[in-house]
Amino acid sequence: MARPPILSLTLPSETGRVLSIQSHTVQGYVGNKSAVFPLQLLGYDVDPINSVQFSNHTGYPTFRGQVLNGQQLCDLIEGLAANDLLYYTHLLTGYIGSVSFLDTVLQVVDKLRTVNPGLIYVCDPVMGDEGKLYVPPDLVSVYREKVIPVASMLTPNQFEVELLTGLRISSESDGLKACNVLHAAGPSKVVITSLNIEGKLLLIGSHEKLKGQPPHQFKIIIPKIAAYFTGTGDLMTALLLGWSNKYPDNLEKASELAVSSLQALLHRTLEDYKAVGFDPQSSSLEIRLIQSQDDIRNPEVKFKAEEYT
Image 1: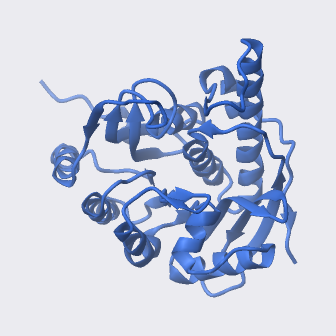
Image 2: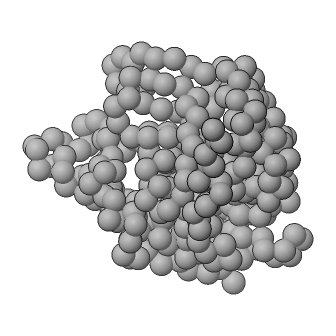
Image 3: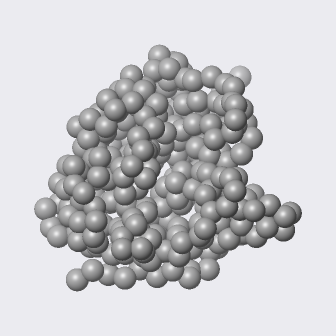
């Protein structure tokens, strides 16, 4: 009996086929749990590899689970390769906890680009936030020297972009310079997903459409919400991948859609916690992803990009 075709390969979606290597929690929405469903809603076939599998995110008093090592990742990739299943349009990576695993991810990038030279690699270089590093320090140099040169899009936060460029970001101009440094090292698209500048929260985006030419740069002002949410960075990067592929030459539009989706979801999350009598400032909040699927599919754009000249 003939083996049936893999329909995601023979009849691929118009948007793409994504391999997503991130963390996974049984309960709650972080890592792949925060990224896979939104990308599927936007029309992508998504194959997740869970770099860790935990009962819940690490902000809880306890957690249990397993960590995937580099050899186990290789085994999964070799299994896909043995069955001619390694054709992907996109690779998405998030939290990675060790140098050895990140080195293996770099090998995966090479393998995927052997099959599809046009692979788009979207990297969220998860290393820390607000001055706190929560990965081994050795990872920083691996991201800087090995990952950035092969990434197509990079989505760091303010602390991470400072680590990657060695620049102190205290103004919008500093943020634009940091984007230029990253462009020179590799990726054509850079989105600094959150910058606290003079009391304002900003996203800064930069798209170098032609190598060596001045990039198209913009900002989106984002209202601050007096609460802390888990999984928002993972979701934001997934949304940026999803919308930037639909609008490949219009990163500002993709960012407007991504920010608008995320803000609608956060406000719904906040209101739902308040509705059950919980003080949203007393603890980190699990996002209401399933309840916000309409805002993911068809966001109302309320946050507009302002171009830098």
